[in-house]
Length: 344
Image 1: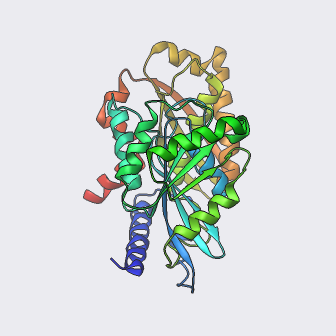
Image 2: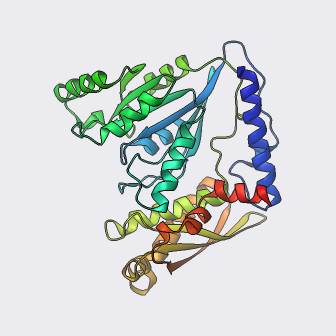
């Protein structure tokens, strides 16, 4: 398929998504993106999709946020923080790089795990480049074969990104690079530190160089494809994970019950799902102190992100085994909600 046709199809899909969300009263992160068409083609301009894949905690979301220059994906030291594919858009004078953040590669054991595995495959489908990110502080092990095997099955160019190089001495880094080079023929091997932004300028230059020529795929003021209610759920989950440390596992989920906009005020009512009674007590805290902190931190960050006053009310609900319930798992995925709305 010719490049302009593919770009046009992507633009139509985004427009249809926004229209359907508007009909259902769901706000999109950047309202201006619904009325502003992407600029026309420019000579020598490059654009395309880059999927970021890797093991849990390799730094995928930190990298996407750093390259976009805005927070589009939540970050936590706990594994499997990212559950859905998340688009982050990098705007350059000469190019538009559309990054697709994906869940960590792992063996699927629950309905939630299977959904995350599906999100990885959908995130890779149709992209122009694949970027495999690895934690350079870890010894090469059998789990790394997940990422290598995925790169082998990808038909286009694949980058290897060795992350967290600020924590590794150079004599240890070189043998690791050589080990990965023996496993696959990478288009580029680039050491980076996503957290400290080391090597990111070089990475962007190489990404752009490998993308095909074509028009921008998104408007210049759009930096993600996520609806505001999904961003709200993710930020609440991030704060809950951060404030409970190791006491509550990543198995918590957040459902937005109501999302109401009235002028400059957004009212959000959300439920945090837990699987055990003990987790419920930890999230609420003594006298409700922990849940209050979660709400305050999430509200302040949402106000900065959405540019509006936020009223946020949180509830904690015991839902044993929700991760293995496809119906509940699907309710927490905004894309699946949209698919259902489209079928109605």
